[in-house]
Image (cartoon, rainbow, N blue to C red):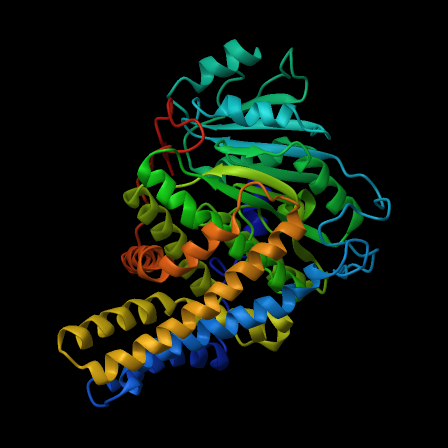
Length: 502
């Protein structure tokens, strides 16, 4: 099975079979860097607000994205029962924030893979949530990635699983007939997922991190989505971050809660534009045959879930398969998220380094008409996103430089621009929260007042931390590093957590 995955990966991955980079892609990627150099240089030659051209470009770009997202996501304002989200496959449309109005074409079988490396502290929480699903998955496979923390004892003593030996799948648990244990040598999450893909036999497969707690209807929502849309090959669920009860944890949970909400509204918008590229590997579902056809998860990528969506979309366009990627509002979960500055920077460093890695491998798609809206709209936006943190950090540094130099003819109009941008952000953040509540039906984990405060303080705190993590990601990418350290549990399972190496 691994040989066949390797062969499929060799056929479909531009990392292994690179193609010529189109001139349009070179021009787009080079252009965003040259533009930054030109705008940055203006700070040393011009006066007035135009000396802060780097910041103005950042503000204009970010505002245009907010307008695009708000326009695309406005359909979530429509009353429940009004068809608002056309299905790409031609089957009956889904309704925002409501249950499906038509029976699924066929009910697919659903399996769950829990890739775990030293996750004994949180595995019971994750498994209890899976056992409590209203639509129980037909198979749950614990892909034990060489754990050395007591995971084996936990699975044997609590769930009655018999050690199958390295590289083999156990017999079912006596108490939980859909639960099995796949014991593997430590090789990383992607390899563990690939091994489990070969062992599982369901139509659709969910990947759930061992620190992710599913809501009771999550599996039912995913199974229904795949049954309703034959062209659906990948789907994202909605995640709520849990960061712990320490002051640091509360701080990061406050900002990340509203960041996640905005991000999922953004994913909905890009889904509407048939350009969604991002699902969260912590809670996602895939059509198994499609994933097998493109070679599974790439162990050489820092963000294997993000890279896989690119490969699925690339293969679909090349073979005219019409595959679709969606985000499912009725599928919800909570997940452990960084609750300290060090762990937050490690996470964002890996995410951004993996983003750069994937952008580089799939550079042939940027500006390429062959890939439709994805190539002509989404990927050029992503090209600018590669340098957006550089724009943001240099804009902030220039503002501080002007302030300390006493150049108030520049500082005062710049502050006026910033105040205007904060006002736009406030409106968008509140609008996105309203849309999210209608879409997900979840009103218990968010507050309009706290969202308002987060929007006011974010540009001077959390946003700079995000950009700092991205800057570290650039360094990580350029140096070709693959390791990113150990994440400490601060949310789910924190009292017993020992952290997990990724």
